[in-house]
Length: 146
Image (cartoon, rainbow, N blue to C red; front, top):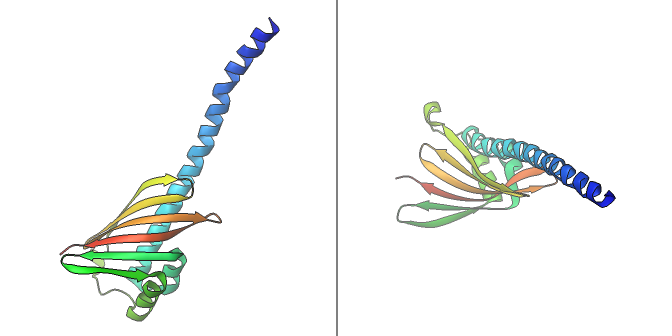
């Protein structure tokens, strides 16, 4: 009888433990979702405003960007080049009305995430990495619309 009661007690406790773990994972996911979205928003706003230091804060040390634009050969850009371009070019000449973006977080799995940034003239697919609790953009594949 004692074994039966012990087994029953464990069976009743298991769903509560599972619910608690699931709730903690959902909270982390909500926090990460907001943080990934904020990192992507900082990235694009830094580009629009020419804020090189803000741009640099969003980039992982191993950042690499691949740019696909029609028949032009694919170009790549490192994080250092990206920051220098933003610093030297300053704010974009894109009219304010065209400075739009739609950010979608596609997936988060542990300390990696993928996001999609849709701007008026291009689409960026991004991979982000979380280190020391901070999300950074590791890579971007950008398709520029003709």
